[in-house]
Amino acid sequence: MASNSQQHDLSQLSDDTLVQLFVSDPQRNAKAFEVLVERYQGKVFGLSLRMMGSREEAEDQAQEIFVKVYRSLARFEGRSRFSTWLYRIAVNACLDAIEKRRRRPQAADIEWGDLAETEPVDSELLSRHAPTPEQAYLHKEQSSVVHSALSKLEESHRQAIVQRELQGLSYQDMAANTRIGLSAMKMRVHRARKALASVLQQQAQLGMA
Image (cartoon, rainbow, N blue to C red; front, side):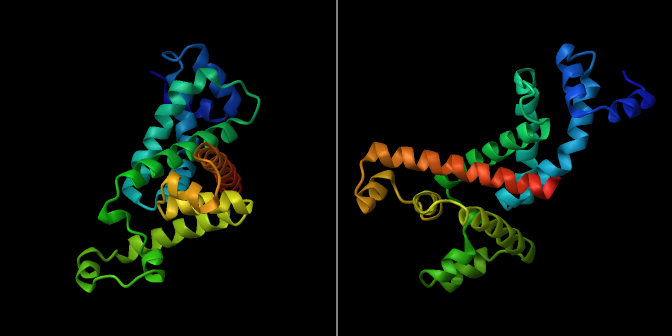
């Protein structure tokens, strides 16, 4: 086990050096990975919180992200900065989690701002499931981040994300609305998600630099 002085020495090393140490012998150099986790866990949690909108989900997601990083670290080729590679994994993991959550809607996932702008909601439902001030703030922050990213997408990609992810339309309905084929619509959504992930990654890096 590494001593406190060894841990301190490792903390002075660059990301790339820590990665190389860990990959060369994961068992002997496990502390190198721990230093990377300590270095980025706050930033990864912050990104997860902004995207997921829930502290509990963000904590779970941050842990899952570092598990993925641990399993994938040997494939890191150093073509980009480690932080860029890490944030790409984090953004994609959060987007995957949001997609899974969308397929299993729950009361806690209600977008209160969107409901207020559409149709009246039963007052008894609101009284049972109204968000706490903290939840309302988190949803507002998450919405702000996503809307900022959406504004940077080209129109067709922005419409694809809004219709699929926010309005929950099926691919069939989306294709019918835009008069393009089903396969073409699926490809458009795929490209839109990649574009959104790229913008969110750039925003995250600016906020975490």
